[in-house]
Amino acid sequence: MLLVLPAEAAKLQSWQFDRAQNQLSFKTDEPVQPRVQFLTDPARIVIELPNTSLERRRLRQNETGAIDEIQIRREDDDLAQIIIELDNDYTIDPAQVIVRGTSSTGWTVQLPEPQPQSRSQRRASRNQPAVAVAVIPYVEAATLEAIELSGSQVILRSDRPLSGYSSGWDQATASYQITLPETELARGFTTPRPEPRGALLSLRARQQGTSVVLSLMPAPGVQFGELTASGSSLALNLTGQAQRRGQISRSPLPPLDQLPNVASQRIKVAIDPGHGGRDPGAVGIGGLRETDVVLPVSLKLAEILRNQGVEVVMTRQDEREIDLEPRVSLANRTDADLFVSVHANAISLSRPDVNGIETYYYSTGAAKVLSETIQESLLDATGSNNRGVKQARFYVLHHTHMPATLVELGFVTGAEDARRLADPQYRELLAQGIARGILHYITENF
Ligand SMILES: [Zn+2]
Image (cartoon, rainbow, N blue to C red; front, side, top):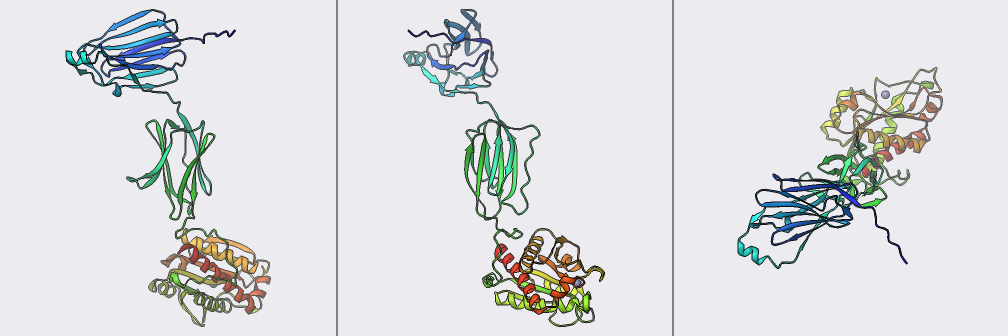
């Protein structure tokens, strides 16, 4: 024998009818699942609350106008009813009744504007069957706690599984939108800033009514894939690689003897060997002069680039003195795509311990990336000491109109560097290293 114990009954705690809004609201002390029907003659909405007790068997509240009365009835020991009864001369369209949970124990029943009906219409409705009214359950709002940007995903973390979300391109804002219904932004929520040159150009999150709406713009070359839910997090998958000027080169450098041919890109590079003529630049160990390093390296660099399909303009090709201004104006006038100035470094002759390569840029973005790519290639080619990629307001970097970089190939005052810089084979290696950096930058960014 099975003994079925009755579940603990809920109690109808309060209710009220808002005449101006034609809206009934009520609360119970425990969650209940109402059933709602529309019946005719007289037109009425019957809300059944199963497993709900009432202290009084019956309660009527007279209304005015199209609504005749509200009745609260105890149908059974565990079935309460709330009935909204219309005047005989009125009816409503049951399809327009909206029953919605507003909390785990609160509900509203929104009626449409009652419509007058004639006596014959009312008679005709007499034998119509009951019509069920849809009930929209209460969904407890999730809290969006964080957005994380990883290389290939945008991850939304919330306090509970997200449901009912949607995503797609919004024509009005030309952005990709993810809508999270019944979701709130956590208190003090901050949207992470997309990394410069990353897969996202922009990311915004805002509260729009009961939804959180995210707007995302991908970098060119990046596509948005599926949204995948896992527990209480939701991930937007990103595919493709951001492709635009200023993109950090992510693919590995090619081998020094397999440089790409970029003739189809129609790129012009201005090469600027530093100093020259009466200005030999820095003079280091054993009388090693900067110009005797940077001119041969620059000439070799030009040769390699031309062989790989790059148009080259040079600010000088022999030993002559040239001011900074004409170097810049040549590059600007010829509309070069990139500017590469070649120098060698110096510090006191009493510091032979200071050796290594450093590369400078002025404007962040493309120039910085170009500098980083060349620095990386030079270090890889030579195994030299890495003195870093740095920002400096050098004249030739500041006044050129294209991404511009200045390479310091090593220290003529450094014991190790001076020995290597004096070696024609090492200078050829330096030229190859710079050329590879430029060519790699071109293949990644143009
Ligand atoms: Zn110099």
